[in-house]
Length: 232
Image (cartoon, one colour):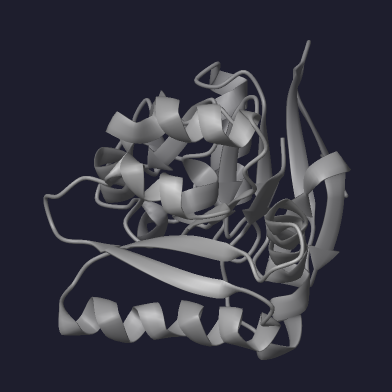
């Protein structure tokens, strides 16, 4: 599968590292024409629209594609039939529990399309829900803080749900920058997830384990006496 996991963050200098591989994969699928990339984002209010312009700008700097923006209104769900019209899917960031709520009815369809060759990119929340077991928020396990409260996404306990299933284990984002690497370590140690990846900001984990961008991808695995953390 052609899956690109981006840990969030913004940098004009790093847009090629963050999104370039995904756009190139979409172009390969489009076979000689500019690929149509569907970008799914939450919110239709003025604040959300202003935030969405960051994505439009970033993808515009990369170029080489036709961008189709799908904005999901509060309380609405993603219409999976939109995938019939495009070559690749990018799911953006924001409120991770809301992305899960809005897209979960379409997880099976998304997984089928990506398994069949459609490139997928997840940015922040979009990367988190791509996992088999998705960490969608929370900052405490058994009442003990495991990451900064600002990472809670409106949830108190670290909350794990069924994700799309494009990558095994769990994915956390803003790894070092927000202190979320420690949340993933704690989740693996507690058995809430089997194993996982934590991705730094302005960093992309591409197919084949290739890491591009400003930071690292951190792998967290269980061990007899706790967990093992390694980086790429």
